[in-house]
Length: 151
Figure 1 (cartoon, rainbow, N blue to C red):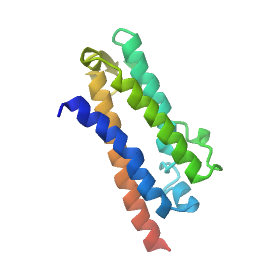
Figure 2 (cartoon, rainbow, N blue to C red):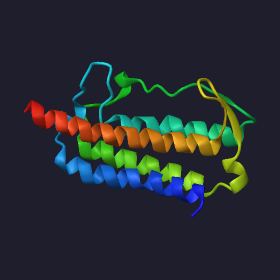
Figure 3 (spheres, rainbow, N blue to C red):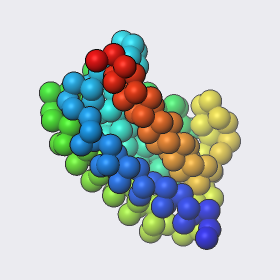
């Protein structure tokens, strides 16, 4: 199995993992933040769009300069039901996977300069997205445990 296949499967696994977790999380837990600056479950859907835009720029531009993605927490519509937020993330992730699946092996090696990482490649940015997913999935598990202890 190639690195590309592994990364695509990992990206596809996140919506499945979230779908299994979400029914056990109510709306209050999904929007709860352990600290004011912390993220909440809605973050998954909101980070996907700028990440896909970054990947597209890497394909369209020669060695683009990319700053870190810091989603605007004030743009998160936390009034929406959790199921709607999950549906939105699933659709956005499907778009990301479709985009990446259509790329050639050469495209996966396209360069960019990341503000904090330095010179890197598109495939490394995909790995960063997988790592981002895994970190937040682990945080959801920890958040759930904290919430259970709290209530």
